[in-house]
Structure formats: C-alpha cells, structure tokens
Image 1 (tube, rainbow, N blue to C red):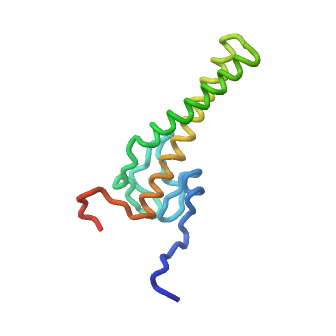
Image 2 (cartoon, rainbow, N blue to C red):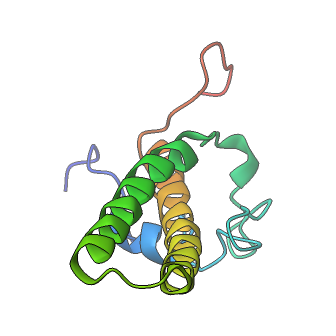
Image 3 (tube, rainbow, N blue to C red):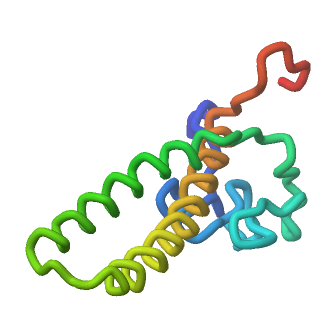
Length: 128
C-alpha cells in the first residue's frame, strides 16, 4: 500500500462536518461551544480550534445571500397576496434569524474544515 495516501479513518466528510459541527480530526460533535461560537479545542482529540482563522467571511456572504432571498420572497408575497404588515413581520423576522444562525454555523464549520484539510496557515506562520 503506497505511503503517500493520507489516513482518513475517523475523519468526517466536508458536508457532514459542516452540517453537524464535527471535529475535522476525529469526527466528534465538539466544534461549537455556543450557537455560532467555536469551542477552544476538541474535548475528544484535543485539536486546538483557536489556530484556525475563519474571520467574518461567512457572515458577510450569508448577509448577501439570505438578505436577497428574504427580500425576494417578501416582495413576491406582497405582490401576489398583499397581506397586512404584521404577516410580513411574523414570517420574515423569525425566518431570517433562523436562516442566519443555521447558515452561519454551517459556513463557519465548512471554512474551518477546509482550512484543516488543506493545512492552511497564515502568511509568515512558523507552524508547518
């Protein structure tokens, strides 16, 4: 068996890790400590999550996508049914909040998993 094939036993797939907040090292559900806050490290394998820098990219990206979808759906509903304002508030505020929280968790987890799987480092980092 060639030695250049990476060992992937126990490691989750990209989509699975992003959707369920799985540790990219061991596959345990330890990635998040809060709603969208990373835990300091994996409680199963000890992988330090603080060395990964996902930044604000997922939040900005989701703002544009979810905002565009919600506005489009709200305009469609207004033009086709013309409901009272309270119906819009009742529908779109909770839907927007839920979509942002769920999407932010998945996007942050996907970015961390991508950094881990590609062994990404900051420029000038001494860690190799």
